[in-house]
Length: 286
Length: 286
Image (cartoon, rainbow over all chains, first blue to last red; front, side):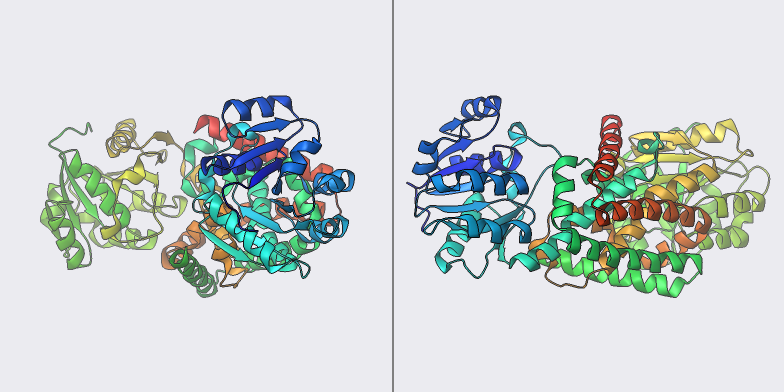
C-alpha cells in the first residue's frame, strides 16, 4: 500500500507515542482518528487538532474507515484487543504498532488476524520520561531510529508501507530486523540501560546528590524516571533476552571491579580504550 | 583574600580544564598566565587570548607575580610539582586546584607547602569527553557544581576566596565538603558512572548498534569516551571509596536481576518507583 494523502489513520491508544504519531500525521495533512479509554484524552487531542475524530468506544465505524491502524498499547492489552475486536478490522487494512517487545506478540497477533488483514510490526525508538497524550511531541522522532520488524509471513508490500510510515513520521534512520534479533538488540540497548539507571538511583539515598553531581550522573539517571507498569511488563515479556544481556554486562562490570581491586591499571586502561574506540565509532555513524 | 580586578592568576597545566579557567578569567578581565609542557598549547592560548603570558619552563617570574595559582594537573603530577617547585611560591599566594580526588593529595600538599602559602582545594564538577586546551569552553561551568574541599588547616579567608573564585568562573552551585565526604560522593556520582559506561560499552561489540539505538544508550555511553590515563589514575587514587560504591551498586543491580529472573513484578515495580521518586526530587532541585 502506498501511503498517499487520502489514506486514513486510526490510532488505538492515545498515550505519549500514540499522540506523537497523531501529531506527526496531522501535520502532514492526513486524516487521523483515535480510540482510547479516557474521554479527556480525546477532548484534548481534538482541541489541539491532533485528531479529526475520536471515541472511547471501540467504534466499528472508525475501525472500518481506517486504511492503516496503529496500535500504541501495552503488549498484553494489544493482544487482548485483537482477540476481542480483531474481527471488526476490514480486509485490506494494514495494522502496525509501537510495542517495545516483539517475539511475545507478533506471531500471536498475526495468527489471530483474518486473511486480508496484515500486521507489520514496528518499533519507534523514541520516548520521553513523561507519559500521556498531553506530553506528545513529534520532534522526538527527528534524530531517532525506527525499526520495522517483519516475520516470514509479511509481504514485501507491507514492509515497504511500514518503512514509508517511518519516513512520513520523520525518523532519522529506518532499519529492518526480525523479531528475535530485535528483542536481543532491545534487551541490550534499551532494557539493560533502564535496569542500570534504576539500580544506580536505588543504590544511594543521599538527598544532597544534586549539589555535588556532574553531568555524567544526570545523564545516566534521566531514564530512572520510569513508568513502572509499562517497563515491568516489557522486562518480563523479554525476560530471557534481558537476563542474557544483564549477565553479559555483570561479567564486564565485575572484570572492571577486579581491575580496581587488584590495582590492575593496564587491564583497566585497555577496557577504557575499547570503550572509547567503540563510542568514537558510534559517534561517527550517528 | 578578596579577588579584586588587579589579582593575577597563574594556571599550571593548560589542558581542557586549565583552558576553561583561563578563558573564564580573561573574559572577566583578569591577568592570566600559564605554565604548561607544550609550546603549542602556549601559542594557541596566546593567539586565542586565553592568557596574557606563558612559558613551558617553570618560570620563577610567573610564579612570584601570581596572587592565585590554579593547578590543573593529574594528581601525582601535582604532588611532584609541589615537591620540586613549591619553594618558589611567594608568601601570601593562595593555591587551588581542579583535581578529581582529594584525600590522597590534599593533606600531603598542605604539609609540603611553606608557612604563608595556603592550599585550598576545589573540584569543578564539569568536563568534556575531549581533552586539551583547544577544546576549552567555559560554558561548561554554567549549569555545573563547584565543590570547595577544605581541611581543618584551612583558614576561613581562603575558603571564602575559593568560593568567590567559583562564582567568578560562573558555576551554578557552590558547596563545601571535607576531603573524605568529597571522595565518597565522587566515587558514587562520577567514578561509578564512568565504570558503568565503560562496562556497558565493553559488553557488546555489535557494530550495528547505532542503527537501533534510542536516547538511553546514547546518554549512558557518552562518557564511555574516556581519557584512560587520567581516569585509571583517578580510580586507583580513590580505590577504597570506589570499591565500596561499586559493591553497593552491584548488590542493587543483582536485586533487580533476581526480580527479572523470578518474575517478581511487584518488587521490580517497587524499585522503579523508588528510582522515579528520587529522580523527581533530583529534577526539582536541579
